[in-house]
Image 1: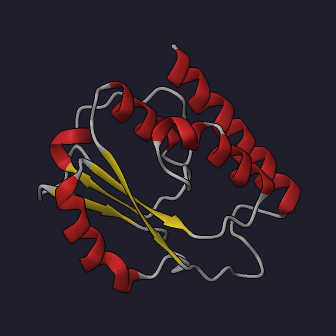
Image 2 (image 1 turned 90 degrees about the vertical axis):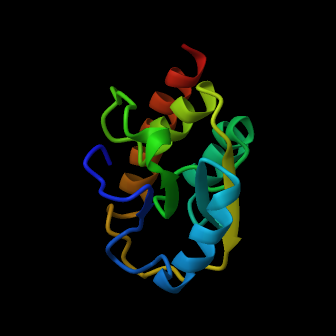
Image 3 (image 1 turned 180 degrees about the horizontal axis):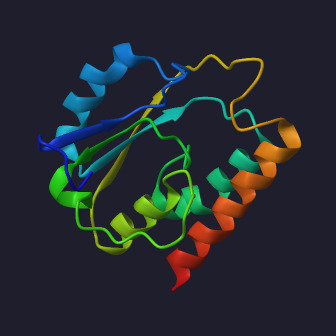
Length: 140
C-alpha cells in the first residue's frame, strides 16, 4: 500500500470468491468514506459471526475480516501494523482510532466447498486469533 501508484487501493482475494465485477460500484461508493468494506451478506463461520457481533459493532461493519475493500491511499499508507496476520482487522482498528470514516457495502457471496485457510476448525481458530489481536489493538 505504501508503494501504490494511485490514490485509491482495492484489495480482493485472488480466489475470486469476491466478485470483481463489483469493483466499479465499490470505488464509486468509497468516495464517501476513507475505507469501504465489501461485507458478505451471510457470514459462513461462527468465528466470523462472533467477530461481527463484537469488533464489527465497534467498527460499524458486519464483515470485519473481509479483504474485499477500497482504501484511500493517504488513509493507510503510513499505518504501522504490528499484529501480524489479522485478515485486515488491525487496519480497520487503526483507521477507526485515527478518526477515519469506515463505510460498508453488503453483497451476496458464493462460498467454495474447500476454503483456502483450512477446514472449519483451523479456519475458526485463525479467525478467532485475529479477532483477539484486533480487539487488543482496539483497547490499547
